Length: 179
Picture 1 (cartoon, one colour):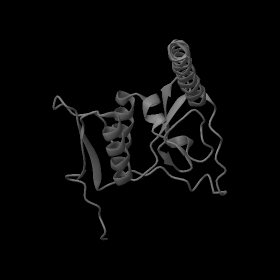
Picture 2: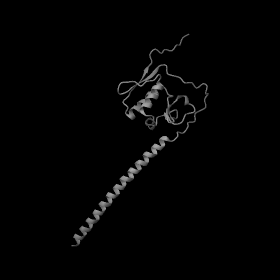
Picture 3: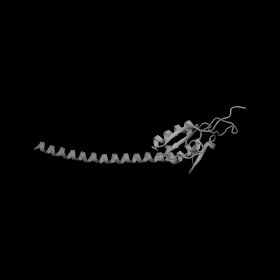
Picture 4: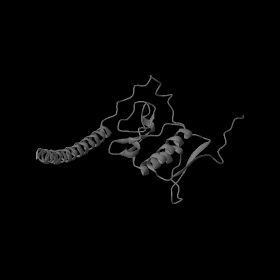
């Protein structure tokens, strides 16, 4: 008789433990969901926080020139076969980032010249190379064509854009080295 009572008691205790475990699991799932939501909101807030301005070595403002590559340009082909338009590598780079969504590109955290290539702060040295996207965001286009290509390769891969990106030699652009 005592073993039957013990069995019933144990069965009741086991049932209570199972109920308790299911409540704990539900709470754990709720806590996990809340933690995920808090993490997501923190990331969104960080996305819109002002970037820290970069302190550059001093330079002569008048000797700081904007130059364009005379030898290479970018060719960016979309999935449908059309090309991203632009007169220069910088313009093609900028237009590709705008199409890819600058905020998604910013989240990839690609750093050039000490700050993210999609920034919300105008840099004191590279301001001439930061093109406005809108809503206070700027794309830094100051880099050689080969670096722009590498950045676009990373963006293409991480965001699954399906682009074909090439750095090609310009045609009919010769430099005169003689008298």
